[in-house]
Length: 297
Length: 224
Image (cartoon, rainbow over all chains, first blue to last red):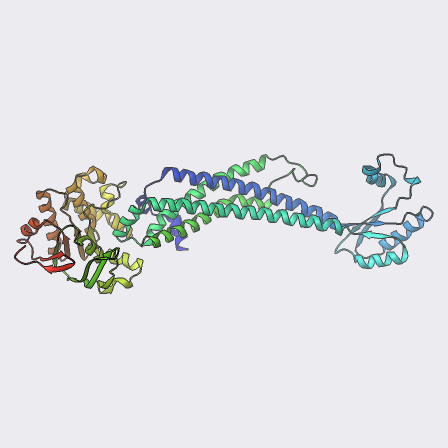
């Protein structure tokens, strides 16, 4: 905590003890900016994909399809019986038989347009929409088996599970990439700090000669690299946020490529990414500095 | 203040000196002499815990240096002012900034305004305060190093060949500053191979002269 306080308050005289290093300073800022930019874009895509998949999954979870046997002679009786069962089932908010046009549209991708449904033994489909906490699917299937023989209730589990799985994996990949970016920032800052410490051995020797404690020497390096990472990450994040805002917008339910961005509190990442970069740089430089100072004893 | 008891040190297996004892009592003045390579600088570095003795015991202000961690070594060094032959400055800082470095390191930067002008005047560098170390002559750099060594008002001053790169007149001036510090109660140890300078100073200060040769430290007598 003291280290963070010192970092914020700073000590200009201590900072001046370490000579400025031009190229390493610019590279640190540049790499931190690139990494923050990539992190923002990755997070935006990951969060959007997860959000859209969750919407899809919710919509599918709320609806089911009841398929009646293709029996033209008893079609009306089967439909009436099924609707009666559904209307008397707790948790079923709505049950609606699909019209011939709707059924024709569903089959159009396979059979083409103008399909003569009345001449084919096509099963009647009923859309079932759950309400409240939903219904007991197993109980409903049992009742349907007894009262509408041959009726099959499909609650879309076989569709929903892979979708939810894919969404989870995409989120996982997004977070993994973000963690890798953080690790890359830490590695880069560590290398830069080690190079700087090695280049300033004489400065460290003089500071020790006049009674400087390790924490004083480390602070000058830690502060310098933390502020550089913070500055670079702020620039990269700002650029990333601009790119996200400029992404094509639309209804993300139609395509995940439309509407990539942050929603609501997700915009906090724009603040969090630079702060996290600063924290990563602080921890990495501090570790590298103390390791080098121990080595120089 | 600083006590070396039967201390040995060497590089790469070869012993530079062994069973060497030296006591720097409060307010004492010492000259350490001997030929180049005899180990004068090494002995000084043992005195401010820049090196650890292979055997024997080095005590800094009553504490065994071998048992001090890095933080405590740093604290001990604040009581020891060191003047190196090559001065050990930070070349990107001005002379004034180099001189006040010990104050900033210990968090007493607010005392700079009070101490610096007086110190610069004492070593005769008031006009060179804003110059960078490479811009100064050898004698000016040595005086600046002395000013930095004393700014924390340490108990002990260790000087390694402080007159090595300066002319006779400047070396006399530097030595007078060190004698002045000793009269203020500071313990002073000067490592030098300049016997003429030691002879010249003997009239001004009651100094103990030790000679380091062939790994042994012997008290120099009238044969100096």
